[in-house]
Image 1 (tube, rainbow, N blue to C red):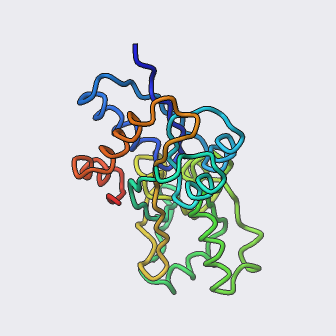
Image 2: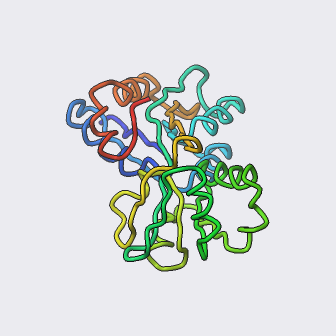
Length: 230
């Protein structure tokens, strides 16, 4: 029997990859797909440490670092989706205006507490605060979600009043209201890519899988998860 294709990914693509895996398995039943989704930083560290996976799906900058360090097969990167950042509040809370850059800045300044992620969206959010010159003003009210914990959970639990994370991770979370995406002027778009690990025993199978996941046949699924085809 063919060995399953083992994949590690960040939480941002967990639900998407589950649906893509089911679609691929229905069309190519030769291979079963096993996906482990964890915090992106944790996933990259485990691959860097040499843990055996067939495929890695992470933000493209993380994939590039793993390619540079020799953990992934050169030339095997396939861009899968573009993912934007959304803003949310606890359900029932007032919904501040975030329609413009200035409105968003004021919402951040007025929020009692702010949740953000350990992933690329969180890094870029902190950079934006620096550009606005408000880092010192908001530092005391920032709460970073632990790896693998969605910001939506902090919102739903009432631990933060305003939260930022990939839209894909906000969708379907009970107890929150998604206000919408960041204004275009400050939107953070992350590309998530897949690549073949050097520990992979069946590179052609993984390359075929990634080609399918990047094909037009998967565009509708990506849109349902709040993402756009890369």
